[in-house]
Each structure stands twice: as C-alpha cells, then as structure tokens.
Length: 487
Image (cartoon, rainbow, N blue to C red; front, side, top):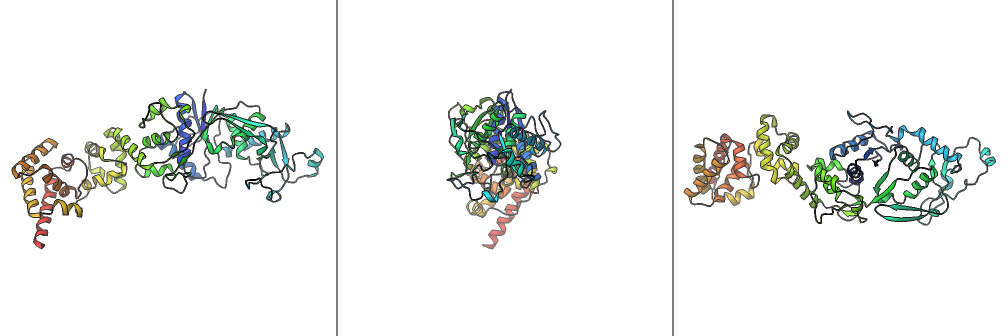
C-alpha cells in the first residue's frame, strides 16, 4: 500500500512551496487509495513554535488536505498506528538507532569541538569534517573518558545512485560528502537521521519533495542502506518561483498560504493553481480542475523538471472561475463572515435574501473580499456619489431630475416588486421620455448605490426593495435640486 507524507518543520508559517509538496503527496496517495501522513519535524526546540504548528495544520485544513495519520490538532486527536507524529516525542528511538549504527561500525564517536573545526572548509566555503576521529582505536576512545562527543555516520566509498521518478537517474560521488553528524552531544538527533528513521518506521513508500532536497538524498539513501531498510521511491519536484523568477521568499505577501484566505481567495482555486506549478494535465491547455478531478488526473509522470513562476493574475482568473463554480448557497456561507467582519449586520437579512445577494454578485467576484464593494449599499445608506460618475451621468441635473421623477412615479405603482416588472417599468419610461435604456438605468444605478458599477441593476433593485429604492431616488432628486440652486 502506498504511504506518502509531508514533514514540515514548524519554525514558520505554511509556505506556498510546502503546500505544493503536501498537495502532490496527498494527490498521489488519494489517486492510489493510499495513506497520507502529517509528521512534524520539531526536534529543533529553539526554532519550533506552537503557533506555527497551529498555523500549518490550519493551512492544510483550509486547503482541504486532510491527513490519515498525524498529530492531534484542535478537536482532532492523534490518529494512526505509527506515532507519535512529532519528532520531539521520538528521541529515544533515534538514539537507539544511532547507537545501533555505532555498534555495527557504521557510525563513530567524534570528540572534536565545534571551534576546532571552524577553519576546515570545502571549495564552496562550507564547513567540512576532515575525519580526525574516524579511525580512533578503542584504547584512544577510552582515554577520552567522559569527554563530550557526537556520533558521525561513516560515509562509505563509491557512489550513490538515485532513481528519481521526476529527475531520472542522478549519480553522486560519495567523496563529496563528509562523515555527517547523526546525534549531537546532548543526545538530540540531526535531521538526516530522524527523517530516515521516521520514514522506515512509518513504512513510507514514496518520498515526494522539493528538488532543493535532492543533494540531501544521498545521505538518506546511505542511512537506509546502513539500516538494511527498504528504500522508498523518490520524486523531487521543482520549486515555486516568485513573479520575478526568484525563489519565493518568506517575506513576500502570499508566501504564507493563509494570506490568500485573508485576501478572499477560495481554497479550491489555490489548490488548482498550486497543482499547476509543476504538473500538467494530459488534456492540452486545460487549467481548471476541481479537487476530485485533480485526484483523478494527477500522476508523478506529468510533473516537469523546470520550476514554475507564480502568476497572480492567472491565480485571480482561476479564483473567479472557482467562485462561479460554487452553488449560491455555498457562496453565501463563505461571504457572510466577510460581510460581518466589515461591519455589515447580516442578521437583519433572511437566508433567502443573502443567497440572492451571493447569486447576483457571483459573476462580478474575482475574490470573495470584493463583496464588500459590491454590496455595502445594501447595508448602509448611500452617503456620497462617485465624483467621476456624477460628473458624467448627472451632468444635466434638471434633465436627470425629470427622469428620476418619472421613473419614481412608475415604480411606486408596481405591486409585485421583482426583476421583470422593474425592467418593464424602465422600458416604458424610456419610451415615454424617448431616451435610450442606459440613459435612465446608469444614472439610476448611481442614485441607488452611489457607484457606476456593480451587480445587475434590476437584480440589485429587487433586493433593495421598494421603500429603499424610492427613498434613494428621492434623496438623489433633492441632492440634484440643491446642487442646481447653488449653480
């Protein structure tokens, strides 16, 4: 059975690149009826912060990336048979494995202080261990007494070959790796040991991760081999680049997945877009996918080697498509918290009314947050009119007053206040005034909403209701009369 995992370090928020790795692992597991595991690599106590643990889990849940096994979160208890799923709770196991490697001669004690090794660097300027303690005799080790030591892995000679499902065959000469630390002097495991031990004990079959980990993989393969453990299949996908073609910095807005939630994007669009940052469908030029469709069509073979550049305009376009794909009821439920957050009292409106609001605004929403601009006039009085629209649409106040008084009279006679009867009233009024439809509708929109753009005019007028509509037309008439009197 296929078992994949995401193993983030909770030392920061859920990065868009980590979300991509999680998504690929999740899609692959779901496609193959496998198991997806969430594991927290929190052995670095100084960098681990519980708020980041909560933020990461919240981000995964918002995206819809649910885990079959993992640590407790919120009201969900730990689940799975291979826990605990936090490395900080598995230290004894790592220590046990490290000393097994020591007993087998595949690791050794190193007594060199950190300060004594600071001058040893490779051609690239990275610290390099020259192997001073590699061949200490048992007698020399005994002479060290209680001196502090780390455990180093004894890197074998030869080469390590990675048969990567994305990158193909990649060869590494083992001579480019020094004998790396697997257990620190205080007993804490190093990442390389912990991740391999967890992958073994959690029976991970496929390791899908960013290609920035590719150079770490030979160390991990060496450890798998030293522990006589089955080697998972590896697949290293390209990183996410920002719009300038650089690695997506944590400092950029949007690096944190939850930034997109706050900006009014729907998780379906983020998942759809992130999937396309490296993966392509067999259907040429197809870009819109629902989550079930992504599961159906996803395959590692369709992941390319080249990094993808983030494109906000494309994401916004996809977001609009996904918003229009929602049912009006679903959209309503997503919009209500945004409306309330911006001070609009939705409790005064019925569910049916709010559903109609969602429906008439749906085509106009690039993001959910746009609902504030498109609907504020439903909850608040119109206090001002757009200056540019006023100058253009109400440039002849006396004429507009005549138009408004005429349509006001027509509207006051309507008994069934709904779209078709409103449209009919405007059509009759335009015929009687001998003006084009827009010459009456556009000035009326400004009177009712204070804006020149928004939802469909007759739809919004129906939702405003008869009393509010007539009052706002009257207010606009009084406003224009006062303006005329001043000129």
